[in-house]
Image (cartoon, rainbow, N blue to C red; front, side, top):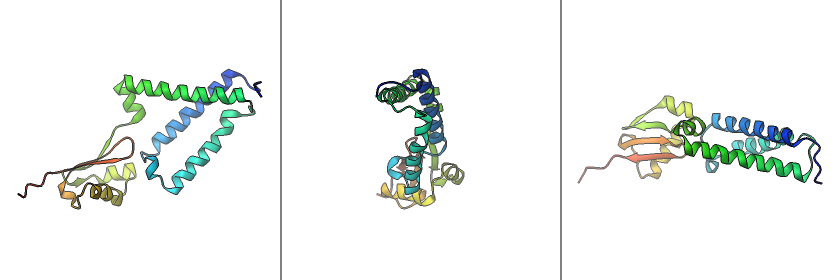
Length: 158
């Protein structure tokens, strides 16, 4: 139960390689938050975890191996978190930057396409702010966490 079938170093290298690969894949493939995941996104996430299991474990079945892998993954997560906190440059590289979708009523269709945000998703976020008219939107920004922040121009009709 506690004896390893592969070396500790190999387990750590495997965990690091899989962590970096999954991080890059998630970073490249969008900013959707978990609450906005489609059923297809959820299926991919579940299958991803199953797919990387063998890359992490190989023939390792011991409790000790699982503990080493879990500790390595948490340590990597904390290390990346600390690096983002310490450096704006690292933060931009790892977390990305927000994307402006609308400015002063003008929709940036190229940014919508690049970020894979549909016009209906944009309009839904704008309506949540109580606005139905794009011309009243000062800005709409797709944040790094996948949420859309909307600022409405003040209504001067008094």
